Image (cartoon, rainbow, N blue to C red; front, top):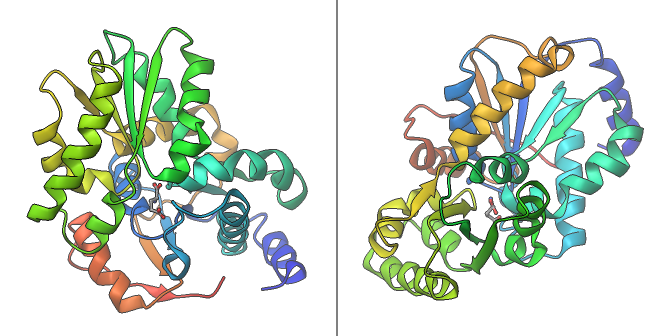
Length: 288
Ligand code: DGL
């Protein structure tokens, strides 16, 4: 769609309620989607994975921003009034610019929310030592988004971050439970804990990482609490919709979920079943 078609489609759906859009670079946001569906089961959802251009974690700021904006425009054109960036990398590198620069022009009544802010809000109540560990893609860690958001909300906390470039490929290649995964997970968590032995709260700052939870648990000290980002984002959205009935009234309630991908639809459906545990997923391929 060109920009005129997008503007026309958005205008056409302005007074029509629609599903909650959930965007991710690929499969990872499905873990966030599951958290949203658990918290708000009666809402309709439309998931979009940009699998053709994933992974985003190693891409430049500009590219992640441009890809994410295209996806948001697409979901708006499909009738979503609220889009959740269920991707840490997109939340880190694109959200702020979209909220501040694009939304006021594109669709001032619509909203785009991310996963980093609600996670940053939650960690303050979880730590006793004040030392928070973050694991994420190289892009998320380099953006320092967690440090910045946690620093704004809880300036007394210390944040220690470790990029884990191999964890997404391990999950996507169905090696999350394989022996090779142990080597990388152990190395990265040892690096993280060497930054501060006081770390007592670990944020999985990438949507793929819950699938490595068994390995992560094995290589992190028992005292460390692992933050469930999907649960936090679900609770935060419930709270947001209570505070914003004008947005909630534009969300349809049929408990349905559609899946869109920019890559092969049947491959998406197979991987999506692995991420969600739902055997019955069907997807449609779209172009951004
Ligand atoms: N979904 C991305 C995230 O949460 C990880 C996958 C990617 O690098 O595209 O950071």
